[in-house]
Image (cartoon, rainbow, N blue to C red; front, side, top):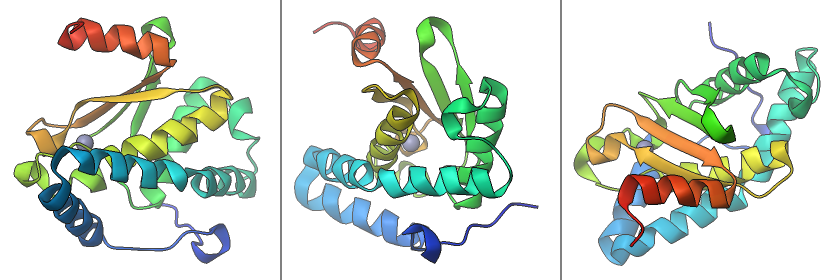
Length: 175
Ligand SMILES: [Zn+2]
């Protein structure tokens, strides 16, 4: 049974996945590739209250501050929290060179499937700020697989900007 969140006490509100899909579709229709910027900015700008809600949710369950959790406990907690928020199941792990990975096979932002051909920029914005608050250092997020691009899952890499730049160059070439 999934946990639930008290939205109104956390500066959160419920919208439907269909609203997010409609917003994505209209932005990409009118602004093409620039839709990415708007969605990323919106996700990033609103991530603070999501992080605060996570911290309060943890504390209500008797847990410590997010940054004090051991890695395995953090991975479980952050997955439970986003699932309770309706985003979908989230796997979190930290790999080589301190690059973290978030992956999901049913993430809400890509629920429109390959129709939009638009990666999860709103989510990337959220994750950039959300995880940056835990590491207390600037982070970059790179979505390397997305259901909206026809992949089986969404996969986000999260790490220091210069480290992710290297990953990007390895994956897509320097120029
Ligand atoms: Zn995606």
